[in-house]
Image 1: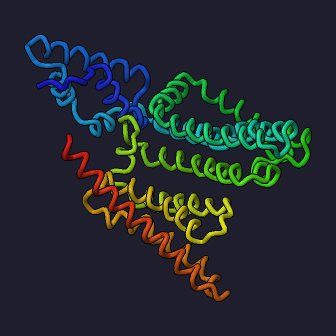
Image 2 (image 1 turned 120 degrees about the vertical axis):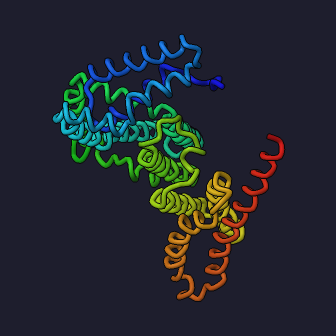
Image 3 (image 1 turned 90 degrees about the vertical axis):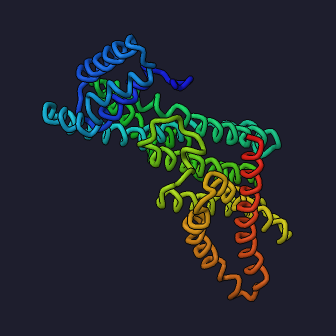
Length: 353
């Protein structure tokens, strides 16, 4: 039976993209191969097969992606090398020049808000809201991962990417270091200005959370390179790689540590908030991995737990054993609570499905 959501054109595009991503075919090759598959699928459809069945048979007759990649590589020997260099340069531009421009624009925003509102409640509200909207935006952009990658591929094929790289790189050099921006606004720094100038726990916490969100988005993109489907929490967290879990645990620890910026004096409340972050992270892992979740939890959180306890050992040296034990329990109980709740929610969802 044909899948109700099957799309022939999209399936052909995805099939060609697998070969194209391995850097072995030109744009003309992709167009010719797409037309061949489409014609073969139409011919099979006229014989009574569904579009999905026709697509499967047509692609099987052509051969696997590995076979086609190898055959096209023999014909287009220079394509893969050119693609590698193009992607390296594009990566340099995106991870250096573009962030430099964005961070510099954000720094100007901080500067003018501070000049206008100083440390008033209006400044706190505006900057905190900006941080929250920025976090939501960068995570939302993950939804368009495939569109961005296809855009870059098209620009590389059209030979326009070198021009864009040069423009971004030149702008990056202008905006970073001791460039024009920092000469115009002495002492302005995106890494310290919002944390110390506004003197607000909310601004400080959301600033650190925004930085960690950017890191999380980069990690998500890196570990979803080979996933053609739309990126969702399930596709990212289900059966995660070991390196992804280590990065996930480290980001969780940094975010949990950022809650200390609230400067809560009551130890119980401080540790409850700290443990809540671990609880949410553990819930995310366990909910999408009912089997082997203990292994995943250990991989993600045992290294950072040992790291955190090593850093907190100074509390014991100061004779504050109570705080040391309370801090350790906050992490352990937070992970246990997240695991328990995830199991309950998963069973409930399964019962009503």
